[in-house]
Structures are given as C-alpha cells and as structure tokens.
Length: 480
Image 1 (cartoon, helix red, strand yellow):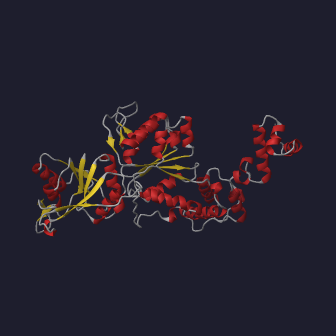
Image 2 (tube, helix red, strand yellow):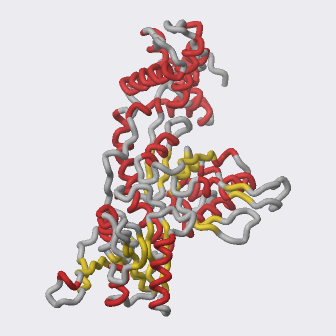
Image 3 (tube, one colour):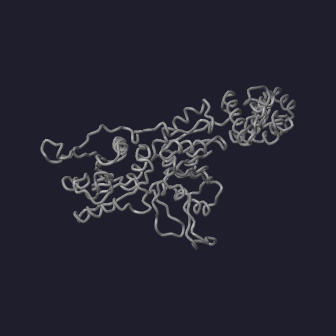
C-alpha cells in the first residue's frame, strides 16, 4: 500500500481572522496543494501533535474538508501526544513507533514540508535509519518555481547501513549522577545503555545476579530516552502464577473470573508511552512466553474477559539472573522469544568482581545518601577496621545488600559505628563467605572429594600425593 504521511500545518493549512484565530480551511495551504497536484496514494495519514483524548476540531475539519472534495480518497488522522514540539527525540520516538506498528509494510511517502524544524529533522532521521520503506518529498510553491507551477521534489538521502542507526540526544535528557554512583567498571555499560535509550524501538535484555542493579540500569535507559516523561513500571515475573501474572500485565474485565469484581487496568496499559521492566523473565512459563511473544510482535494486548485487542506503545526491558540461551537449549525457554528480547543486551558484574576502589566509592555514596534519608546532620563514621571488614565481605546479595547494610548501620549508630552493631554475617562469617586461603583450600578439597570416587582419585585431581591429602583432611577436620 502507498501511504502519504504528513504533519498538519498548524499555520498554513488554515485561514485566520485579524485576531489570528482560525476561522476556516486554507485551500492554498500545503496539504490541499499536495492533494491538488501530486496525490497518487492509497491513503493519507495526517499527524497531529495533540493528545487525542478528544479529536482536535481543526485537524478533523481539515480531514473532513479533504474527504468531501476528494471523496474517493482515504484520509486518516493520528494523534501522537507530543508534549514538546521541539523535542526531536520525543517526536522521532512517537512517529517511528507509529510507523512500525501500523505502516511497517507500506511504501511511505513523507511530505517533509509541514511541521516544526524538529519534526522535519525527525523525518530525516527516520528515513535515514533504513527501518522503513520511505521516500522524502517536499513541495516548491508555484511562486518560487521557474515554471510558475508547484513542483514536487524527491529528496535523495544516502541511507544508513545499520537499521536504527540514527541517534540524537539533547543534553537536557540526562540521568543525574547524584541519583546513583556509576563506578569505573560500569561506565562502558552505562554508555551502551545511553545508546540503547536513543534507539527507541529495540528491546533490551539485562543479565546480572540478584541485587546487582538491573532495575536501576533499566531505569537509566528509560530516563535517558524520549519516554522519560512517561511511566516506568516494574514487575518481578517470578513472584506470580500464570493467572496472576497475566491479570497484572493485561488487566481484566469485571466478572471474567471468580474475584473479578471490577474492571482492572493492566501494567502494559499503565505504562502506555513509557517503559515496562520485566525482571526474572527466565522464570515465566511456556504459556506466558507465548503470550509475551505475541505482545512484542503485534504491539497489542488482550485484556482477560475482553474480545477486542488494544494497541500499545510500550518499550520492553527484561532482565534475568539465568543463562537464557542455556534454557533455550534445554527446551524450557523459547528461542523466538529469546531473539525478540535480545535485540540489545547488557550484562552487570557482581559486586565481588569489582575493585576495592569501586567498593569504597559505593560505600561512601551510600553513607552520604542514607544521611539524607535519615535526615542526619552528620554522617556515620565507619573507621578503618569496620571499613576493611565490609570490603572483605563478598556480598552475595550484591549492591542491594551493601545498601541495606549501610542503612542498617544508620539505624543502630548515631555517628561512630561500633563493632557490636555489625551484622553477625560480617563479624563471624560462615566458611562459605570467608576469603582466607585456608578456608578457600578447605572448601575446594571438600568439593573435589565429592566429585572423586575415592581419596586416591581426589589426590590425583588436586595434584598432590595421598599422604598430603589425608593430612589436610585431618587438619581441616573434614568429614568424609
């Protein structure tokens, strides 16, 4: 299908009275002129920056007027809820999302002339990205042409070889450093996250252990994107059965099941225009994998108990602490959903793999931020011994556990932190969390003994003689 698409020309498509109020349709305006002289399409989609809760009377009058004059032509209006008509990233995000959802397979002619300069730049970026079959046209008015007639100009642009490769970012769209500390090892990850934020139509999968900061990274992507003024909604998928997860994501109609005493909006609808973060995606069932795959493909949801699907404009970011590709090999996770989720990927390292300097930066950050939380005039002082104790602890709960620890210390200390207020897991850690050489060696011997058939084989695996192994077993009081 050949589709013409353009912005309504708020200034030139309408006539105005001396008070500059719109009082009619300008049949010499750019939209009418295109229809008069150049229209060879199956339909025309007129874009409005308005919200669209109620149709804009002037845009609809323009469509009605064109339909009456050209009664055999299909003319539609689309409202995109642009909150800032000079915000290029927001305009590009909204328009690109609409085109990909509803006109992906069309031959699209973009009428470049109407709209703000930001809208025109957005058209250029969308065209140059190569994600859609687009051509750019503008009209040279008859009073500026040599022939004395209006001329249609085909704007030839060398397209990018990378789909979605055009990225634009305004400096005002930034996640403030004081909201969270981004240490040296995380800088490359967050730099990639900024690039992902600007490529609005791609999904993202974040890998990382529990507590490593996956939700924060997803929030960073949202806040650096054109969707930053819209909702950011999170859901831990592992916390729900299929029935509860489906009702939370898509909502339900009153009476659709026992306990559905009223209509309930789902999280996808609540996140409209924004981002939804689905944590622990590796835990969802085959049934929910199939449902989610269809949502990603079709950009539509079906409320429980409803028969009519609803279009959505929501960015999906997922996260997992599991190896999804291994789950696909095992047959417990769908390859097609895996590929849909992993258009872009990010991986967060656990806290134990970060440097001492980074850990100190994190400790200092949480000490300062929790001072504000508890409204203290002075921050707590850890002291060298306690700081070293914290630095040596492996933090299996990662950054979240460290943050909770500092909050715990604010509860029990006014200024100088005493050893008595330190959690037992730090002052008297189990062997599992000790890092001294003897404990590490003991745990490794226990592990090898479990793998080997006998002590002779264990000694061979450890690279020592049997007498040395037997002495270690005795010294470490290892039960066989």
